[in-house]
Amino acid sequence: MEQSKQLCLAAKNGEVERVKTLKDAGADVSYFDDHGLTPLMHAAREGHSVVVRTLLEAGAPWNALSPLNLSAGDFAMEAGHQEAFEILVNAGIQAELILGTIARRTNKAGDSQEDYLDDRVSFSENKLMDSNSKAVMMAWEKPLMEAHAKAVCSGGGHILNIGFGMGLVDGAIQQYSPISHTIVEAHPEVYERMLQTGWGKKNNVKIVFGRWQDVLPQLESYDGIFFDTYGEYYEDLREFHQHLPRLLKPGGVYSFFNGLCGGNAFFHVVYCNLVSLELESLGYSTQLIPLPVKDCLGDEVWEGIKHKYWQLDTYYLPVCQCLQDGE
Ligand SMILES: C[S@@+](CC[C@H](N)C(=O)[O-])C[C@H]1O[C@@H](n2cnc3c(N)ncnc32)[C@H](O)[C@@H]1O
Image (cartoon, rainbow, N blue to C red):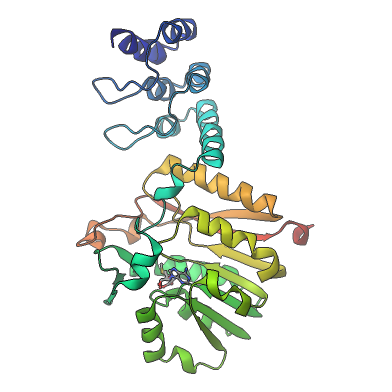
């Protein structure tokens, strides 16, 4: 315990050799001091990049959180310590590629998909809620959905949207009068509502009821694709990406709701990097367009909602295209 406290101090002061000696003597690299900070957080906050690297190599957890929900990467980022920040981003990417520890928690719901699809949902003007008072979709996202629609409709043609929710993105897609507009929706009540509100009667709209995983054989190939489901994990998004080469036409544009780790700025950076890398390995470039969202999100927005799934000031809208298209 005493040694671990000393490790925090040595990390804070950037004393690399002392850090190594204490670690070899058995000091705990995962120790939280009286302020709830780990040695790695101390080193990151002060920008001691060599100590950051040393602690990571010794097994210090890159994703430990302080009482204010800040990770070592948040401390480095806030203080503008670029080198320490990059070391931590890379450590995060490596760890998530192998373990995917955070991915399990990245979805809006946190519950399993079957529970959500079997349960009731409730609609109001500003939101669509699941039976656990968690928001499936909220009206504050409207400007984001409009921006997503603009991106995926930029080349016109045939558009696919996965997940109807409140129909915000679909309403915006309709403004671009695509040749065809296919919507996949899995929740029976959301589907029912789509029919009640006339979506089944629109000339260019085709509704496919079912989970995207189950209806893939009914899908064709498209000029623009948007993906925004609920109650799914990062692995599901990843799985969807495996189908892009068949679903997206050459020259087409793909985008998805980028709510990955929307509760922590640093984890979000890690996941933006991770998803871009994974898309690159499939042959897609990803541009992340920053959109300020602070003004859409007053405290009243979250009243009565259990899980505040987005807490960051900037939204990064992904625009993905086949790498060869740009060449
Ligand atoms: C966040 S909402 C989509 C919001 C929509 N982008 C909008 O602009 O209103 C997610 C939607 O995806 C649906 N969904 C969830 N899992 C799905 C799946 N596996 N396949 C198809 N739809 C799914 C949900 O029922 C819900 O309607």
